[in-house]
Length: 237
Image (cartoon, rainbow, N blue to C red; front, top):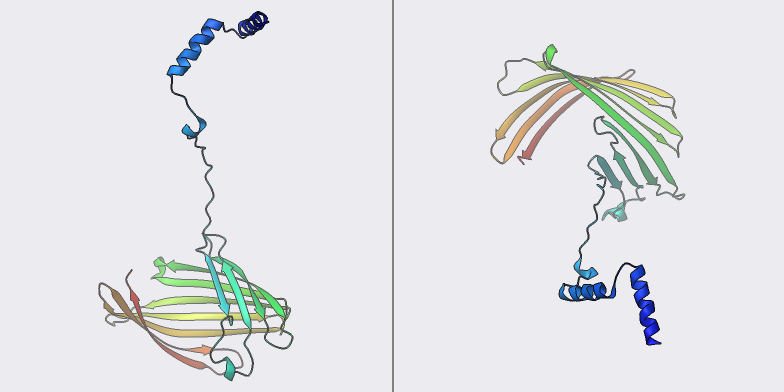
């Protein structure tokens, strides 16, 4: 019986192309070689490059969420709102966003508002440093079915006045607003004389003084004067 089993095993090895002597030699060679295991092999797969996302062109805000210490003395609570705006295109100054507002009255309904804004400016070096800017912004409110759109412009004219350390400019700003809910169209014109000087500029901080004097004109209203003084101190990072 054992002789028949040995013949069958020899026939199988011949079919596989291995003789019993070759198999014995191979077993002896494998006994002298190092045995490799799966745990000894470190396989690394090539990773596909992942797309990276950044939120540096996103603005967020919140109003009325934190409790105020003066809420006891107020006759009613203020509305709570959260919003966000983002700039989808890096090479185009266009922002779009939304705002959610919860009314603090008896109804306490939740309203939403969609908003957008864009601006453009150009420095005309060939015209003596003339600066031109245009901006527009709009919003749609679902609670009041209101559509609001405004268009404004800025014209900066440099003034070559003989004033030491002062940079003088004349700014003219026309503005137009459209309110569909009230059916009103309003416009105004603001003219300002701007002055800027650097008070100190050391190695750590820089202080700049801005002064503006002007007036505002609007149809069916009296001219309104304005004056503003601003001291700006900023670190040099």
